[in-house]
Image (cartoon, rainbow, N blue to C red; front, top):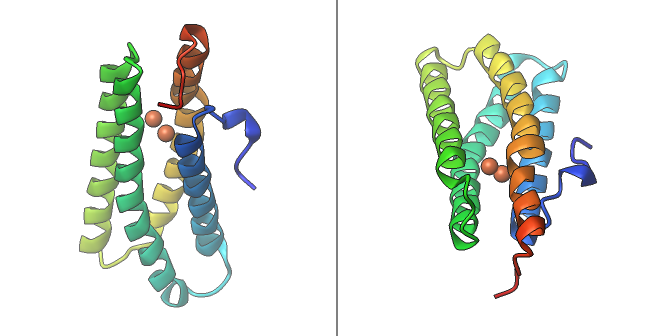
Length: 141
Ligand SMILES: [Fe+2]
Ligand SMILES: [Fe+2]
């Protein structure tokens, strides 16, 4: 499992979305690394990619809404990071479609996505947790 308890932000909705994202990325990597031919796995790869495109945007929006609600001071900066990741994902998937589903492109993308996700959650999203603790924000209202 890619997910670690140390990545928990302490906000149930955000943590459950992070777990789902980590699981999907893990399955995505496993599919990509499996020894079956590209023709055999391209369908599953595309399906996961489509799911990720929607889910990542949904998660970012929910996380940003939460940040606004708690008046998180790093909101603008955090949103800019999210926005540039969304642009990157859309750019790659457009390129990927144009290339006729190039395997190399997806292999590179999956590696970057995984590294980005782990780093973002462990560094940027954890800062939200630190703020919640520091300010004593109540989560249940
Ligand atoms: Fe997040
Ligand atoms: Fe985030």
